[in-house]
Image 1 (cartoon, rainbow, N blue to C red):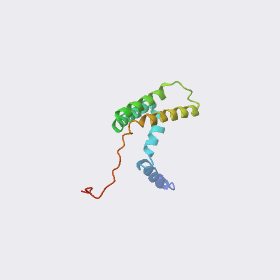
Image 2: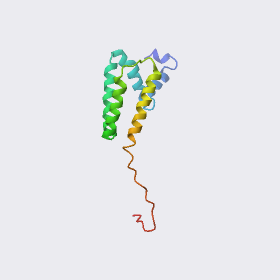
Image 3: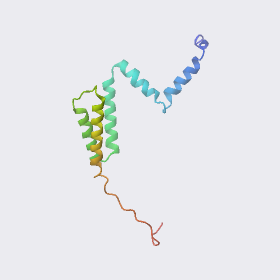
Amino acid sequence: ENWLGWIPGFYSLAIFANVYLMLPMFQGSDKVFRKILVPLAGLQEMLMLSDAIKIKKAMLRDLHPERARKVRKAIAKFYDDDDDESDPTSLKKELVSGYQGLQMTATGLFSRKKKKEHPTETTSLV
């Protein structure tokens, strides 16, 4: 520690590194984990599987069951095809077409809109 203190800016750099790693707004710890530690350990496949499980749980928790089923089918179709991964435009077109299909099927789930009743003089406000 005695010789590290003589390096100009060492403690400032250490403080900034800690702030970057700790504050959630930067997501520094997640970036270091995913970009440095996981590749060093060779666990990319395990990380992808873990992320897929988290996404599925969130989808089942947050979406209507029928909508979640359609989203799962669209995701499975997107990953099921053997396509040329080097062509990003074809992947983008496939993703956009799947998203547009989901939007068209979602209109049936949300079509039951209630008409807003305007208050009259006799409407109870309590």
